[in-house]
Length: 232
Image 1 (cartoon, helix red, strand yellow):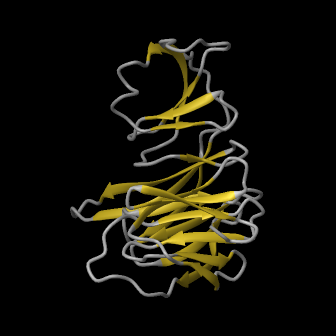
Image 2 (cartoon, helix red, strand yellow):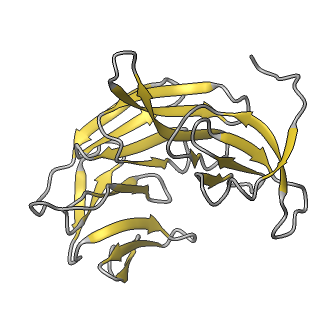
């Protein structure tokens, strides 16, 4: 199906937002709310802060996280399904945010998975607790590259995996649980090109909005690396 004849539903969203997953569309027009299913809501035009109504546009399927692509066309997240025998199946789910239809699926080995969209292509980078990085191409619905991230880790290291793209799409920045460094990977081969060391139990990373620096949350401090020179 490519269209719906159902009338839009208007409801107060105040009870939904504090308790459920929320992801913002890059254009600011929509938010993805909930888990089972993820619901796409259109914000009121010219809404002021504190507005309590929105239009429910469509459901995008069950997921435990939601990440919009930079152009707003796709929504990705991981899902957990219970099979008839009681086993749990984990998978990456990609939906077309415009049509509301499934656009891709990939089995996962862990529910602790970091997901990041490429800045200039419908492609996802994934890093999970198996310490494998995967590149998933949405149009072809297949993994185009997969590689183990090798490097020293601390015994019993905790935390969650994290991954991000450089603004030009040529590098991936990967953080593995128990690793005291960020591994910089070539985005086309997934081979390591350098390690950003000198960190103490880093927990999260993100590229700044101006694309100039990598910010790493590290034991109560924020460490910035210049993405051109890699200097701190």
